[in-house]
Image 1 (cartoon, rainbow, N blue to C red):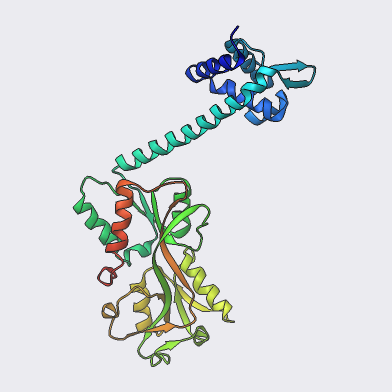
Image 2 (cartoon, helix red, strand yellow; image 1 turned 180 degrees about the horizontal axis):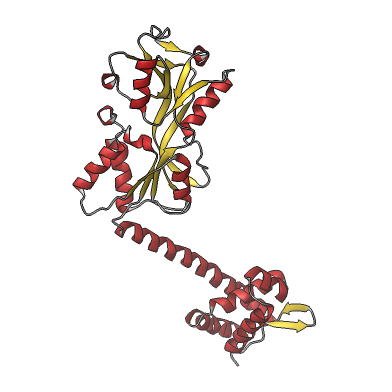
Length: 321
């Protein structure tokens, strides 16, 4: 007569060779819950489906695994001895399944030559567009479809998986959802006419803007919110007479109309008209511009190479326009 340990070894090999994972999961869930009905709820299948899978497993193994007495369910001696083995099989299957998915994703990203990018309009001022064009010239086999949109739209695109990389501020990115790589830290400045009463100052505070007529970014942008809230935190309502997302338009108005433009420090002094002055706001809020991607994704191949390239090539002084 074959001893039980030999039967166990033979059964283990048999299950490994002809494993029905669904049957084993049903068995394991009944073991953990002690109930066919609870097992069906946890597995999101009907109770009859759980019973059929258990019966099929018992038939294949030629062993009874459970004693069913009314509503009570308990393991037989064979079921008790096999529970640990089946548990390990399920655990290893889940590990293997996760590993297979990770390997496939890694290969997909490595082999992919199309990298979708979404970014806010400011990326043009930071030299990123220039860097992207250089990268394409150096690696013509890579396709880089680019979408320029406002902050909220960029984040929605990232959430929906419509882009591989996003360029935006870090203000609305949840750290438990996205990985980020900081590109630059930005601070607001005031651009004004050399005839303005504040023009002689090297730097100002937010309260110096009280009574001044301001030009700020448009309301559908994250920058507008920062401009307004920073003034409100300083104790006053900003007197906004114009909104625009085009710095060159705003600066033109400052010269002709003596308005003040509250914008980012992205424009080189050499690029400004002679009649324009730039003042630092010493108590202005700062924020980071970052590249972001979903936390569960790993960057491989061309995507990682592109990100490293953009960080190293477009953050230099020469790249800022």
